Every structure is written in C-alpha cells, then in structure tokens.
Image 1 (tube, one colour):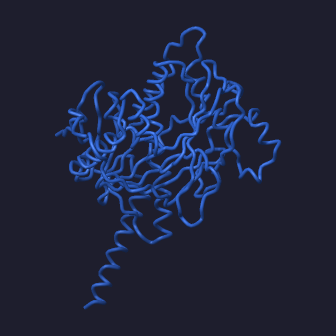
Image 2: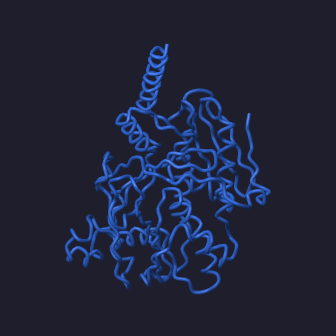
Image 3: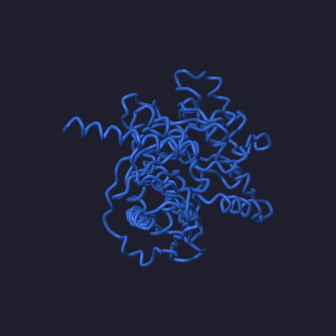
Length: 381
C-alpha cells in the first residue's frame, strides 16, 4: 500500500509561516584530518577574510578529496545522540532525526521537481530519515559525466572552488592565536575535505520536533560556553552577477543557502563571488534572517521562505501520521511529478538505517525510564 502527498496547489502554503523553534545545539562531533569520528569540537574552525584576487583553481592537482562512496547512514549522528543521552540520563525527544541535508531537500521540494528518494524507519516514536545512498551515487556519477563545453571548467573543478574558498577563509585557531605567516599563506595550503565540525541541534517546524546534524564551516568569534546562540558562518561561492540571467540563478541558489543555514541556526553567510575562470572577485556578508524578505522585496519571485516552511510543516505532519509502525519506508517523487509517494519497502525491522548498538541503547533507556516511573508511583502510594 502507498500513500501520497500532493504538492499542488502550492497556493495553500502562502501566508504567515508555521511556528519555528530556534535551533539550539545540544551536542557536536568532529571528523579529524583522516576523517576519523571524534566526540569533541576539535575540528572547529574560525573565520578570517580571504585575499581578494586569489585563484580558486590553485591546488586542484593536490586536492585531498574524501571517498564518500561508502554508506555511513546516520551512524555518527546516532553515536553523538547516544553519548548525549548517556551524559544526561534522558532520552532526546524528537519526532524526526536526520541530517540537515535531508531536511534541506524537503524544504526546497516545493520549488523543485527533482526526484530525491529517501529511506526512513520508525522506532520508539521517532522517525529516522536518510537519503537513499544508491540514488545519491548515481546522481553524483551523472553530474561528473556531464559534458563540459570547450574552454569552460569541469564540474570537478567548480566543486573544488568551493573547498578552496573555505581553505582561504578558515583558521585552525582564533585570529589572536594564529601566526601572521599562516594567515598570509593560506592560498598555499593543501585543500582537503576530510576534517569537519558537525553541530547537532534540536529545532521545530510547526508541530514537529527535529534533531538535525550537519557540518558547520566556521565560527565568527568563539563558541560561548553558556549555551547561548553561536555566531556560526556558512561559506559559499557563486559566479559574480553580470546580468539578469545571473541574478535569477543566484536567487535560486539563495534558497538553498538560506534553508541550510536556517535549519542549523547559522546567522551569517559569506559568499565569495568569482569570475568565470575561478578568480575571487569580492565577498559579501549576508544575514540569514534577511534573505527571504530581500528576495520577496527585490527578487524575481522564484521562491518564498514562508511557503518553504509551511510546506515542510505539512509534509512532516503527513509523514508522522502515515508512518505509524516499524519497517523500512521509502519516500520518493518521480521526476517532474507534483506528488510525493510513501510506501513500505520492508515489513519489519529497520534495515541498515539504525545500527544494533543504538537500538539496544534505546531499549535499555526505555527500561530505565519505565523503572523510574514505577518507583515514582510507588513513592506516591
């Protein structure tokens, strides 16, 4: 049996946005320079402005690119949640647990017609979502095989430009603790995407509580120790705007930029505008919160922030009402279709989405909560 969620008519998502719960970091983890998982913030990086005029192509031949063909599922996110629950002694309450990238695709789906299948399972009242890995690899292969016009950079080169820009903008320690020599020679640093700092936040969209994990590029100043808002920075690159066509392309990019930062509570996006051949022309600091109103006021009407939020709220509510039992479920939208389908792939179990250690931990935690509740009742009697 399958269930369907109709995207059209999108007019029903117009209006004031559904209630939003500000993202709050509850935990974090790092991948080190060998991409080994660490339960700490050792890979946090600090922002410092890059040198304008830098060649974003420099170092492409020595790029240390991580092999992401293995399916890591939600493992690192779930390990971090387990560690947090062990520390607090309480289960993290959430309707959905997933990566930020998965939710970005959900929120953007109202203004996109691409097929993006995802797999999910329900366990102890929570739905766990992950991107279908086979589809992800096929999509990456199609992109790498796209024909490149003579004289234009390849897809691999343009992807590298984004990592190069990050290298030009990042310091391994606060500015006051970093040598002038390092700051001035960042253009010569070997570019790698192995090390990552990942934030785990609790947030809400409408009546749906979410735990999201996602990479954060840098912090503007320092991470507060009192649990207050963090001045994260998201780093992006884009072609410098030369005319109307470039403006429309950038406006569409802004939707993804905004959603990604909005979901993790990143307040500032720094865009490096480049020339067609990858020379950094200028940078622009953009407040995440200002993007939807700016697009509505000055844009070409390609997307609407409130509609993205309202759409995500209704879609999550639909999934919560539909996926009421265990098993492995598939959610997909066929290319250019206005209908999102949900159907069961496996009648029982959780596939490879949830590792055994997480399942066993949650069972143990549930038994502990039940025992505590029984003791409380006995005390009252």
